[in-house]
Image 1 (cartoon, rainbow, N blue to C red):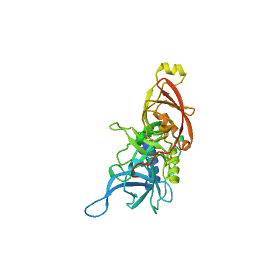
Image 2 (cartoon, rainbow, N blue to C red):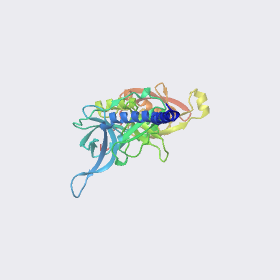
Image 3 (cartoon, rainbow, N blue to C red):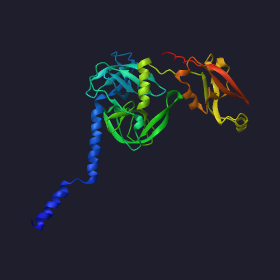
Length: 340
């Protein structure tokens, strides 16, 4: 073979051989595309409907939109509470354009999660993964309907784990996933999935105008909350009946009582006839502990107000002026909101 022929053949081999970066990009693209193909049919567009119009045709008008996904074969849908809360009616539109009326099974503003149900969706549900097994740097794929653009896909990585977000009512949502997969209005309630197409979170929030700071409720939290919503339609939490804020405790008092903490919850308001009022808690008191658990701030107090405390009496340690007191509080469920 002549030198010219050898050179021509080598040139052909170079043309046929993909560059390493191109090969990696192809593998990445295939991974994302395969994951989307598994999940996208179960992703729905949620319409929250407002009141019926007083004039003209009697149909209700869209009040807002979001995303959701079918997670059982019998048509149960997961989405965000803020997407559906207060709506007079709900509808879910599948990827093929089928529009189905949806019923609210239950919602929990404290974790910003809600469960809906549609009849006969005839699509394969998503597979729920395990958010405890994910690591920063893993591929994260968000699917949803931002600004009404059906089944939009964005991809990035898991940026961090174990974040906390403030939910409706001030309760802290723990174990939140941070990702840089782009989210926009309308993505709320859609799935965040891993490279296997397993749902690892429910997309819930962004920080505006920051870029790449997006958050999802971890699927292990979602699985627990969804089970309780399917069972009871709501999440039961204990109620103390106070409004307060985190406040420091004077160092002399900390040393005098050997508290082991430098802050508590300053009581600003006490609900009339609530559990705290009946136990003798007053405005200006500082809550230091519930049972044996210290209360260093409002988030500690909220975490301790679990369903297990409902109907039970627990000692609550308070600071009144410079005096430390213990009162017995019988915890209750919070009263239902007016008009609900």
